Length: 238
Length: 123
Image (cartoon, rainbow over all chains, first blue to last red; front, top):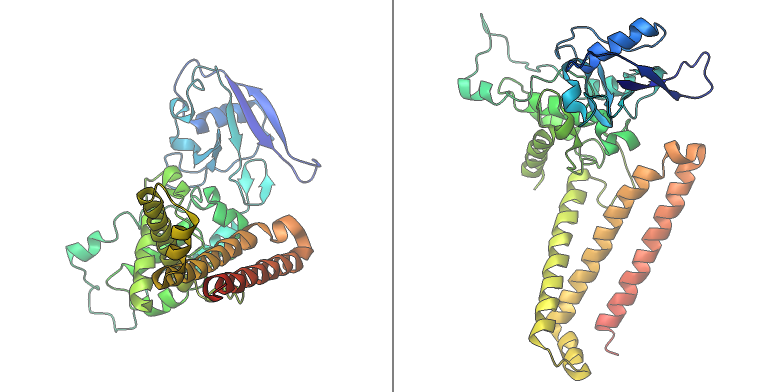
């Protein structure tokens, strides 16, 4: 099968280019990461991130035939019709909107800066009980669909609002984590958290196009979380 | 917290709310006008003029005018802050954005005053 990969080395290349490779998958429905590993055997200069190879670490987020996803859990048969059979090329590009360090490796600083802004940790000034802060099963259930995020950045880098204003709009990943702590019955910083989201950019730049939902490799729904935060702001502000 | 002095209400929630409420006003107005046009197949100038000159329609038209102006401002403000940024214009971005935003604001203000004159001017 044909594989087309975005190549850019700032030390030697004036501008990025797409490089074609021919890979023999023996007709198997390999994961995209397996195909990348085969390419790496042919061309050791090609750079990409990977670690756990099972969709847990979030390292190998990339743009696969136009859609962001994790290479390690995306089988060729799910990329696009005809890719597995070699009728169409597999096209791999870095996550859109972030500066490219080299080939498929992007600089995630802007993404992490936004994550840091939502203060993604439990804030509770009440003296800690002897054993642990308890939660009812119902309160715990509110965190399902929120805590599973692995910060792969597939969602935020598929969001046009994040592309245009990556310093001002928090992006779906950070907003999902923001709601994860707003929804936590043990967290006491609700007011401070909400007051930081009230401006026209941080949260309200989301126009609900749901690209984030369609690409999330963990099946999470940042748009719904953003809607919940908006309702909380509305209750607080009306 | 991101500061912004040119957005409608200087606040995301208020802009979001105004955008939704103005959209409802515009939708109700359009449906109402369509209903009137369907109910009046033989519409002539006299009927139209009397309809538009009635106090309820003067109020409805004024509400529409304010809604369209607010809705347009919030929408175009979003567009200018999305596309007229340093990504597209480099260092000139702030000047370009400010000039375009002020041009839109002045134009909307003119439309608003002109519209009010048409509705309430009695001509």
